[in-house]
Image 1 (cartoon, rainbow, N blue to C red):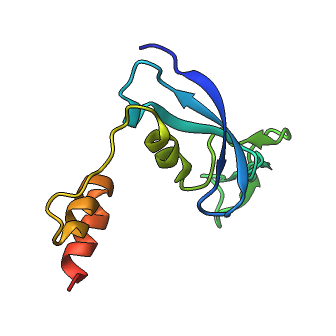
Image 2: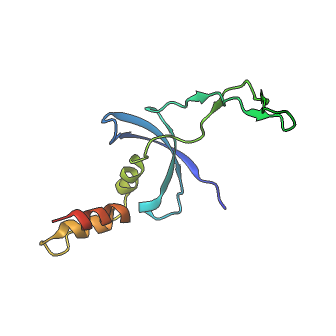
Length: 132
């Protein structure tokens, strides 16, 4: 398995509606519509440190059960993933040259066809079931 390259981009975040600087894991040999794979860092979401909670254990041979604290590292840990929905990946992949455009099919009732080409199966199912 080959290692993905890290690339830097500046995009307008669809969730926060402001400019964001991203570091993205990119596969340069992939198809243009699937080139950018994962967001490594985002300027809008700084990495948050957290301290893991202390774990509690119980003595098995004591009645009633007596709790005790099990060992826990005092060092804070950092999340290795970005916690947003990563909607910016779709924007980056669509902006790649050669990604292809989604054209109209017939001129009549194109919305479901465009949704089929661009949205996930879950969103398409909601549109199909609740559409007029």
